[in-house]
Amino acid sequence: MKFKRYNKFEHGLRQIDIAPMIDCVFLLLIFFMLTSSFTSQSGIHVKLPKAVTSDVLTEENVVVTVTRENVIYFNGVVITLKELTGKLEKFDYKKQPLLIRADRRASVGRVVEIWDLCRNLGIERIHVATNQD
Image (tube, rainbow, N blue to C red; front, side, top):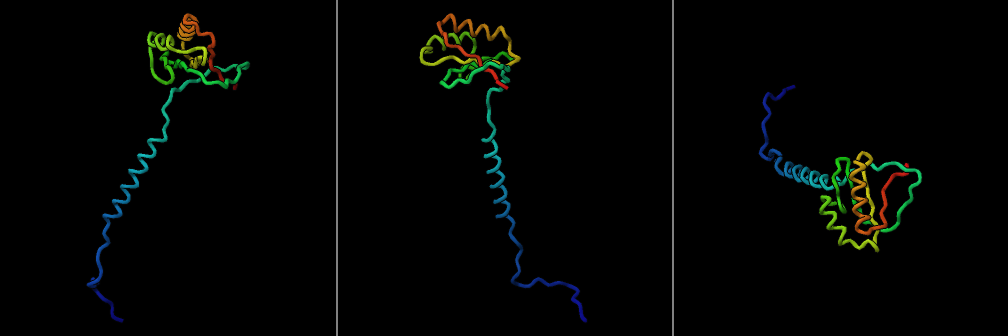
């Protein structure tokens, strides 16, 4: 039996072009990177205090949020106490109640300031958000 010592490339054989495969991989990589950035939800992270006697609200509320760092948000936008006064003066409090969502580690003084501000402006329907768990 005779073995060939050298392999000869035939005339019809070509190397596989890898450039289109790399393009496809990069396109898939970019696609997954872009879609994964849209799945992360940014929001205000608040751990509500627990209460046994809380009720579920069914009406639409205007939300004032106080984080554990005592930062105030009005409907999801960072705001100061002075700006909150201006917003609440324009607020039609007879149509919608106000909901205060305060973190359990937020300063009670900050929550009382907001509550007192609302009462001074004549807003009587003020709710405090809690967890029933």
